[in-house]
Length: 106
Image (cartoon, rainbow, N blue to C red):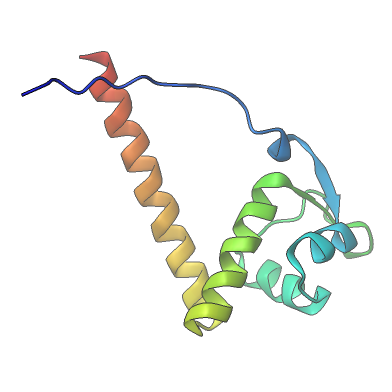
């Protein structure tokens, strides 16, 4: 029986370092602005700037928006359900990262 080796790779996601306008976010995710506004109201994504006329979004919002769009479209979840599922998925991902980090320290 062979012992499995794990190699960890670290880096940064460039997309998370960019700022996107509402229009750019709509184009990248192929959604209407109204959908994004509803996600902001539901707390799924947060604009970087407070003024609705000049909203900009981080790459993290882009990732959450794509996930929200897929959950809404593919599973038919309402936006409150989408928000809950995204929070739970991100919590699970954080727990997995912590577990992997602890295993790496041993």
